[in-house]
Image 1 (cartoon, rainbow, N blue to C red):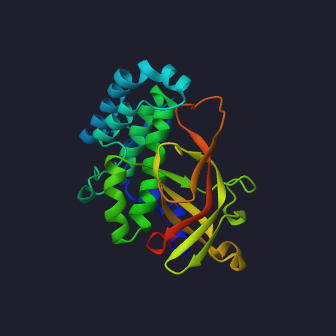
Image 2 (cartoon, rainbow, N blue to C red):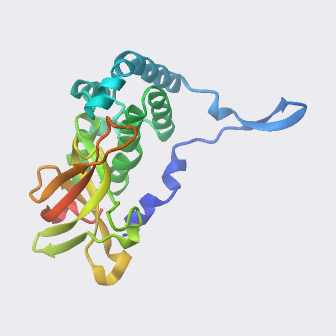
Image 3 (cartoon, one colour):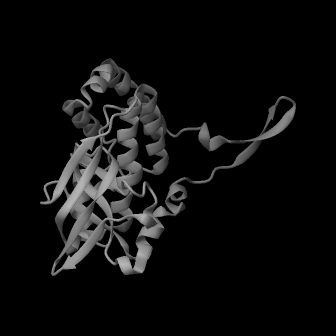
Length: 261
């Protein structure tokens, strides 16, 4: 639980951004402080911006309407995004990631979102929600198992919201009952982004309901785990290429090694 609190804190948002000097700048006859780090990009940062923008213009924009109508990304597009390294930007190079920083993630998300919000959302969720969970909280064995896949060929989903509690984590009803070397998960998650194409799900469940919110832990659940079932897709006004679904856990058996993130 302490690990989970550390993840939710804002520390991660600041850890990779190196402070640069603030200098006064004349504007409309008044002195205004301008953060130059927002405008003076490094060579790597400029390359990310330009490459994502060019890729989006050539390989995403012509197919946006088609993907919205089909309700999903083109499989070859997802592979191409992985090949560019944009779904593992902060993952260390020893796990096959780019080993870059949060600011690079933001630049990639911004440029992708200018082309298509679903394209930007895919890069966003993988890099700012799923990957940091493993980078910061997983043990060495879990990192070695999942980070190379997340950097190269596997989408992940974050499962918190529920039909009766929304995103109120303390009110979630999904339970995790320990049985020998396993936890048995039961419950339903709602509004889970990329649920249809994910290969792994980070699931919040309560392993000790008597302790109320203090009993909540995170569990790593592989897509092919018995008892995991992808439910109804939400009908949305936009972002239709990004699947948003119910995810059901019916006596879902999770190895104890994939618990207590």
